Amino acid sequence: MRKIIILFLLIAKISGSYMEQNKYKVAKSAEDICLIKIGEFVPSAVITSIDNKIADLKTIINGKKSAIIFYRGGWCPFCNLQLNDLQNYENKIVNLGFQIIAISMDKPDNVSASIEKHNLKYELYSDSKANACKSFGIAFHVEDDYINKLKNYNMDIEKSSGENHHILPVPSVFVTDDKGKIVFEYVNPNYKERISGKLLLEAVKIYK
Image 1 (cartoon, rainbow, N blue to C red):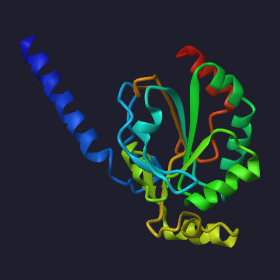
Image 2: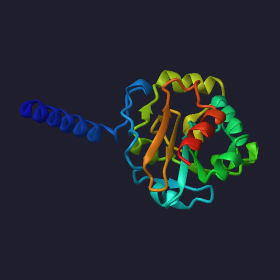
Image 3: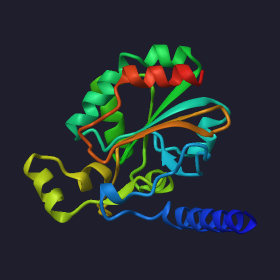
Image 4: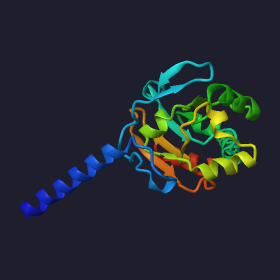
């Protein structure tokens, strides 16, 4: 029995070490990400507000229960649908004691444009340097063929982010308690599949 326990602890240690080593790497594809897990705490990650002020995501949470939404950018029609849908449930989520933090790869100017376009009231931030999405383990490299395909539809991720790293996040939602511990997450490599505002509301009700 003692040998089994030791073996279990060894496997857990190796698994934990592997997760720690790979969490901050950029995956080769959306299917290969090694994301942060429920029960872990929001990592330190520098992001930028729409007025170009740098802040740490941990500081932004600052003792507040939070719903953190990672989306690709204002150029993505599926992201725009998600933002519009979320707006319908914003007040109810906020009334339950949660702040909403939406983060994209867009540079601050383009994030600001998204706020004006959708008349959003919740906080949007720029992660154009990919600090946050790498810290959450949801960053992946975009293939050149896909980048060129997007350009054919007037979607330029380099222009939108102001960077040429060709990194995108897998669209994700993380709900945290007031200590920054992740209590719920929705992550889907298929960027067309998003959690609805209604389902997110039901999730935060559990942890209010």
